[in-house]
Image 1 (cartoon, rainbow, N blue to C red):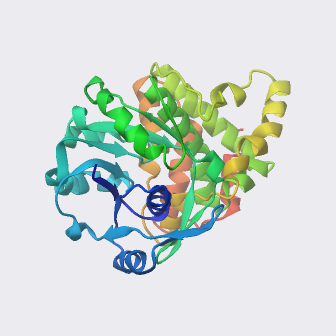
Image 2: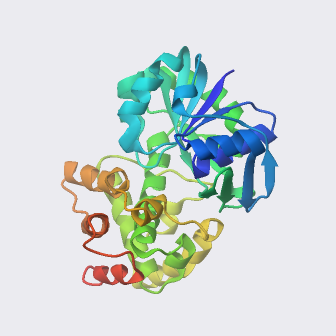
Image 3: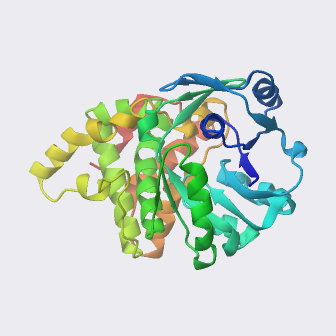
Length: 337
């Protein structure tokens, strides 16, 4: 099988390196020419929670040739239409695109490649791009897990092939209730990615902060509730019922839940939001594809999402230079608590 990883940034480089180390050939594609040259010259160097270097094949988009059986899509959702249109001639007739993006990207992907060629994967690990040829794994390799599934009956027969490949890099579960697994990952990102992006903190620092963990808890539960209002049943991730674990109906349960927060995020404590790196570079980030999704679904069910709304407002103010990245931004949520 020919395998393509489109979007060999931090996480794409890590995935390609783990597959290559397991003997699986995958082509890595990124627009970063210097990164491509370094990967081809010296291999992919992984540091952090793992430390190894492995030879890989890397290209810029104009170097793609022939057709691929599996395409792992790891770019930003905002680029989907242009990237997928260019990729269409390179996707085998019976091939499949596995989107590994944050949020709920499957509908936009299926609209272009077809429901029969679209599956999704909620990724439960993180990485940081260090420089040419190098990425830092910020999650323990033992916690590299993939929740695989499809929103479409027409592509479910392709899941086994994708699972066989991803299992070379980590633990893979095939989810019958895939949108439930997607939504829990979305809710976690709504809470921790947005707060990390606006504050500059790691997920672990957010989980330990007296105020930040309270805000994260409210954003998470609000996001889960918005999904429930639309008939989405939360799914377990990594074997844990996070929705139940972080829910509360009394002050005592809330206090207990808050005390658990650092433990819940232990495997991801060093992770920082990819949105943070975009903001630091003066770029617009994916807030509309994360917290914006919770808001949109909430609106469709007449369910209010004030915490997510404020998170989006703060991030957009940072994008246009009206506000700086700072832990002080989290204080803006005090009036909602």
